[in-house]
Amino acid sequence: MAGIVVVFDFDKTIIDCDSDNWVVDELGFTDLFNQLLPTMPWNSLMDRMMKELHARGKTIDDIAEVLKRTPLHPRIVPAIKAANALGCELRIVSDANLFFIETILEHLGLKEYFSEINTNPGFVDGEGRLRIFPYHDFTKCSHGCNLCPPNMCKGMVIERIQASLEGKKKIIYLGDGSGDYCPSLKLGEADYMMPRKNFPVWDLICRNPMLIKAEIHEWSDGEELERLLLQIINIISVEENNGSSAQLISVDCKLQTISASTHEALPQALPVPQ
Image 1: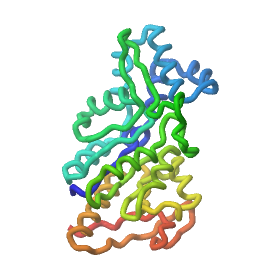
Image 2: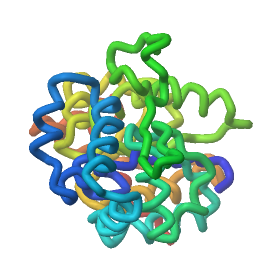
Image 3: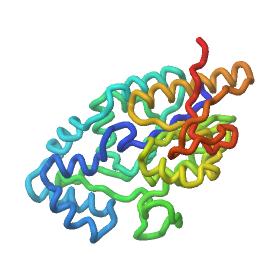
Image 4: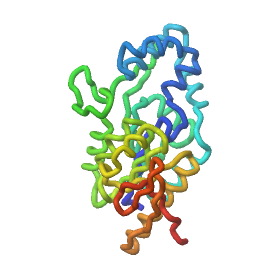
């Protein structure tokens, strides 16, 4: 399936928590984090928290050990490996940071499965302190999107990915947060959006599903993510091989059942006959 690019958010999509909060909470700095939160943007705050951790004796190894304990659903790793084995190209677009993401992926044995990680830069400086910087340097120039946080517009990242794709590749996008709404608006009619049900991006989509051109398939946990993702990949494979359209069933969107043909519903794919 060389014609599919699967784009994953990271926090609460691949892993089952927010990696920033996980590190801060596990190392005992929650109170300081909450005290500073109203005073600066989140991305800047995380860089400041890494400074505080370093000043109080927490090492990079301490941070890495916490990251290795990050919770995730047991079906996420098999889902990623299966999508890769089916020939999909896998990418990450995340508002976490590179150090956190790479540390977790390497621990899980997954880093090699992703061709690209788009996220906030994170690296260890000469003093052994983790530095975290914005993907878009908003101190110099705004990215101009009022839907996204100042440090990263995922919609711009998706547009760059779309421009780089050769041929008629389809995108499957998986995410949970409000930052995943902007990229969902950039997807085309041939693409698929997989929002996590009852998370911020789901709520935003349900306000006006007609704004989303892509087919929408919601998921609740890692088991459902795996099942639906592999079903969508199979559906695309059948369509490409047979030139036929897969049939979909409508499901409830905020207790309102709508016809799947209008793209207002959040349909689940029917199993493809083997």
